Image 1 (cartoon, rainbow, N blue to C red):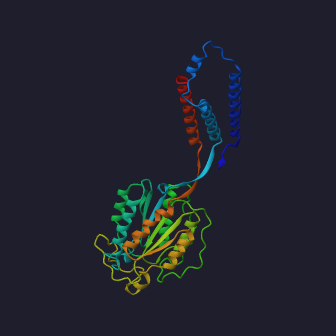
Image 2 (cartoon, helix red, strand yellow; image 1 turned 135 degrees about the vertical axis):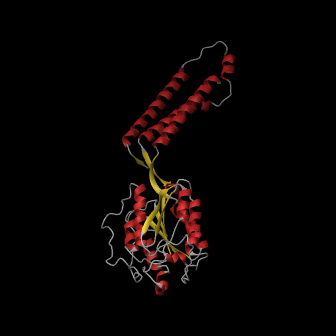
Image 3 (cartoon, helix red, strand yellow; image 1 turned 90 degrees about the vertical axis):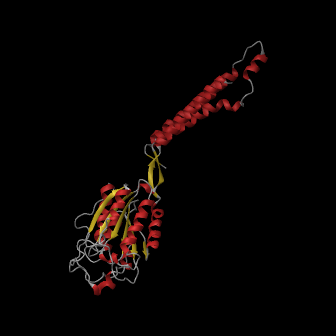
Length: 363
């Protein structure tokens, strides 16, 4: 326990003063003789309805009230756990064209949409959730909100596109958290290095040893779901280091099998560039870009203090998402308990007064 105003504890000196005055009064009453001509009548008036010690209950209530009020005046703070409904969860969802692969029934994007909807529905009331969709670039399609109808509508409206900008999605998620958490700084210009070659024609080399973050973690997290490898923009590990420096954990999820098959999307799932020529990969590059880059996703999680989880079908994805709330439910925070002590002191005083009035009416 930490005291914000330790000198206020001097008010506790009133406790021995009150106790001393009470004892002095009791001694005076015992010494004063009682003169009455009819002793039997006095005994009948006193009665035997309560034990002798019960007459001291009002004093005990007053002393405990003074103790609670005195400690509360010192503004004590204690470290407590904070429930998850004070968390902001940013869901960054890969909507690259590879999410049309039917190695997951009915296809990857439909399975992901179903699992994400269930995850949103399962969150406690008050939890803020935001959505980032990323293909060739990252876009915030739902700012952090508690409106589940708005979130479900955003998930239902996902369409696919060319490219996979995983690093940009992490940075966009950090900025979204910064917009609702004043303690988080947005990404600064030049903070994250931008590669000379924005388009990557080959998967990134496996990242070197990545150290865990040194910053204290915060309740806000990023859930990154991808089915492939970064193909353009900042590298995922560089973006993850920026998130880790702010205490934001990234829980990365690799979705899909190691044997991608043909891609079949509905008209609603196809984006505006569905029939455009070019793009970061062609038919010959499917095996390289449609399989999750496990090494990079593990490094992203390590750099932020999060975890990496693979999921090869919808059931596994739902299971991974269901475990996330338990990983982020309890966080430590310093809470001032002075208001609670003040309320306790007031209740004790009222209780002491009620007991004193009752004893005077019914000796």
